[in-house]
Structure formats: C-alpha cells, structure tokens
Length: 269
Image 1 (cartoon, rainbow, N blue to C red):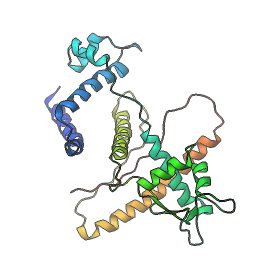
Image 2 (cartoon, helix red, strand yellow):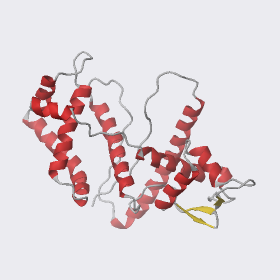
Image 3 (cartoon, rainbow, N blue to C red):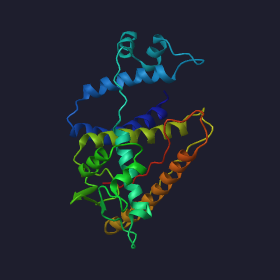
Image 4 (cartoon, rainbow, N blue to C red):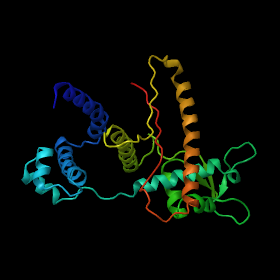
C-alpha cells in the first residue's frame, strides 16, 4: 500500500474506531474479544464477496488477501459468530406504530395533537386497531410492552397516552435494544458508503452530509430543534411512501431484503 493511501486508511480507521471503542470500553469489552470478531469477519467477508469468476475463493486465496494463515482461515470458517437477530425488526415495528399514531388523523384531536386512546374499544379508534394497522403482525401486548419500556407511552385506566413520538433514545434503559440499534444503523450507513466508493458500482446511492463550523453555543438548541423537526417530517413522509409502494405492489418477482433512509444529527464535543 502506498504511503499516502496508508495514511488516509489509518486516519479513516481511527475515525471509525474511536466512537466504537468508547462504547466497547464502557461495556468492558476487552481488546482480544474484538480482535477475534474482526478476524472472523475478515474471513467471512473474503469468502462471501472476494471469489473469482463467481466461484467462492479457496482457503489459500482467503489467506493471501486477509493476511491470515491457512490454519487461522480454516478455524474461522468452521465457526459462525453471526446469528440473524430480530431486535431490529422489533424497534422497526414499534417506530411504525408511533408514526401512525402521530400521522393518522383518526388518532389526532382538533389541534392535531395525539389523542389518549383506549386499549380496546368498539366505538372509537383504539390502541389495538393502531397496532393491527401499523405493526406488520405483532401482538398488541408485545408492542405495548416495548413502548412502555422505551418510555414512549404510558397506560392508565386502560387508556394509552403517547409521551414521545420516537422509540429509542439515550435514556432508554434497555441496553440490548440500543446496541442492536447501533449495529444495524452503522451497518446501513457503511453499506451505503461502501457502495458509493466501489469502482464497479455505476449508480451511487443517495448520501449527503451538512457541515458547519463555529455555531455559537447559545444557538445549538435552536439548530437541533430545527434539524429534528425537519428530519422527523421527512422520515414520516418516506416511511409512508415506501409502505404504500410495498402494500400495493403488483409484483411477485425478486425482492430486496431491506430499503430505507437513515437520518441523524451530529455535533462535536
């Protein structure tokens, strides 16, 4: 690797690793556990994506391109660290229910504020109907429990009140949910970037960043409120549109595993 490229790669890795290592150290995850996972991932990605002429690579080729010995490659290929998690679908279904509550006129009052709704009713829009319409098949109990744990809703006298129209925040007590959210959100962002810098890909995916310096500290809360409001509005519109496409699609052909839009606000310490 040329010196200039090596310098850029090192800087890139430090930028990616710093916030990740901060999380790992807070969780008391030692370096050797991370290095084991990275070693396995190197072999897994090489085997999955770096074959020749459509054929899986040999162990010798994986050894060459990863820098690991054939013995190490063989050990990693016999293990399976990756297990398909369902937590990402858990928070996705919850988010859809909250979005429906905040956007569906049946659940809004005359001032466009969300109503306090009964758990179940034959005479008015209720929480059961909300879950059945937006959750994609989840049970009312499971969605309600998730939203209570995340602090998004509260229940009193068999009525449900919306406290916040979003699901995961830094204050959520469920560390497992937050870590799953971190993993899947980072995966989607890096997949988009990898696609866009891959020379064999001719059509880039949408990716933008807005960056400004030296905003007075006294105006940060105003800026964040503006970004949050605009981003939530866009997220709701995109979610509604994609759901409409999926719901009314008249196509039984091949389908992509997932599609969507990621939004986040950032601020330097």
